[in-house]
Length: 254
Image (cartoon, rainbow, N blue to C red):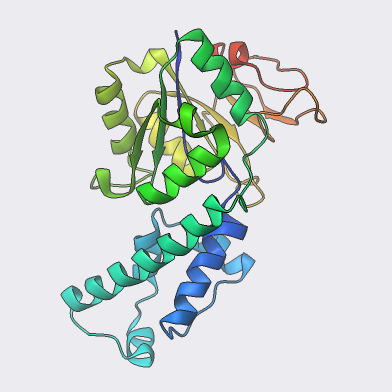
């Protein structure tokens, strides 16, 4: 039986624009930091994998001086840790309140995979509490309990490095030929492909125009039977999904 490995943000739920971004901005406001990410600016920030890493990229000499931050690396790391902790708290509150609904097809595909006896995993650069909150909201607590969750700093190098997917293969005790990944970004595709994994991409508003060469299938979403038809943007394996992506379609990507 095929193992399914999901990214979190942009895959389980479309979280970036209306979830992570406002949580970052509220954190910046609470700590008196001289920045605010617009929708467009956050799109640029997403080129950097990982929330702490995005925060670290803000620390130009001008920013450090204006914000009154420590000039040494250790002091700055301590500040970033405080910011990221608060940002995660804000984001988890949003997720648990149901303000970040799951993307189409996630609950359906997970239900089908569980019924078929397949293994399930999530591999994300986001903090583990954030990932678990989104996962439980998307598929329910019972189904979420059956997932292997690898998140945050569980590996030293984040996507586009393949480390988190290589760790998943090790923990799941499977070969790359036995799993399909669902991603939403080029960084995610680069990571999964480098681990030898077939990948389906469900694009978001932020990632739709990225280069997804090498993906087995690129679609607007996984879709659902009671919704409008999905848009197929690329179909390198000639899967030919119809109105929505089925578990059999995902398995055909191998």
